[in-house]
Amino acid sequence: MRTKKTPLIVFNMQTIRSFKPCYDPSVHLKESWNGTVIDILRNKSIPNKDKLWLACREELLSASLLRQFAVNRAKSVRKYVPIKERKEFDRILRVCSRFAAGNATQEELKTASRVAYAEYAKYAALDAASYAAANAASYAVCAASYAAVCAAHTAAVEQLIEMVLAE
Image (cartoon, rainbow, N blue to C red; front, side):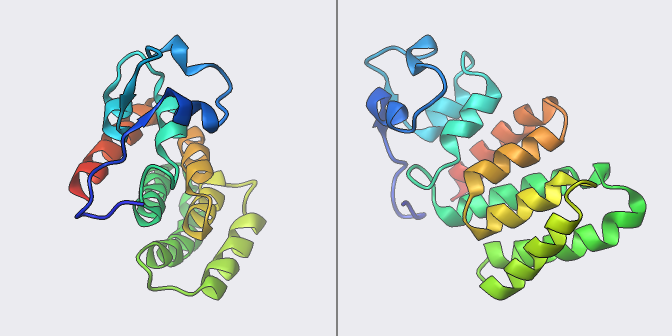
């Protein structure tokens, strides 16, 4: 795990393979490749959804950054939530944001998660935000990104680059 004081983790093809991708990374990277999350996120040959799959894991980025990123992505799909449902969405998202910042308890998060599950059929982004704040940031980012249009992947990659560089 890294902090503002530590450099980005450098990893290689063996590391990527240890995460068990659905295809061999040599499709997009040379066997001798090694680099950082930023290198992956800026690589034009890797599909954005695969960049997010790889980058959004605690082995490579801090849990707090990943939780905040997931909350930010959930906020980005708020516009898809029906207007009459936004008050509840915002309430749950506030709990997730507080948890991501270390200001909400596990119990508050579990309650928000239960409400999110009850509303899952209406808007999957709530579920993604709850999971993100709880402990599965990488899966939540993918879920939140898929809840929006595919173009959101590009915005997500750009946002993650900014957040990583700012950390």
